Length: 191
Image 1 (cartoon, one colour):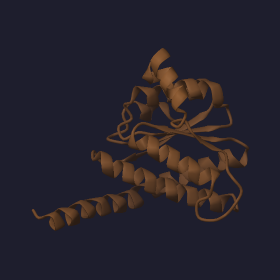
Image 2 (tube, helix red, strand yellow):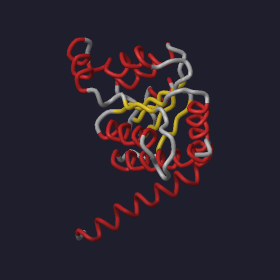
Image 3 (cartoon, one colour):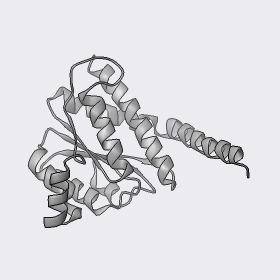
Image 4 (cartoon, rainbow, N blue to C red):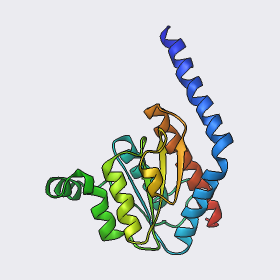
């Protein structure tokens, strides 16, 4: 297979997955957007967490709410739990990496907030612990997952599971879906 053929094949597989998610999960995505908008309308904060590429997605999406997405509007409260290197390294060193998100949830998240987890597998212990910590605080938890959803799927209030085993495609769809959700949230809030 030539390089150009490989490019066409990969992009065709991604396009097929996008079409499948749009057709089969449109209601679930709209439901997540409604939950985000309701949280913000009622004065809550969106908290995002994930590992690796999903950490980058968490940061990216939090910035879309705080700064702007498709239009200039007021800042919306959103925090990525992946950005404080002092906190992450202190917690990883003192309490273990499994606790890096849960500890922040214990300190920052309240009953009116929404924790949004990004995980390509739903198996990361720190993501699972974050969900448990949020539930203990009375906060709602949703997740964007892949590969069947793993243990995290059973711990959250709502989940979108991308039907793929391909990590890169799962992450690409998570980011695309989060952009769609952000657009819907801005519209719902009249911004």
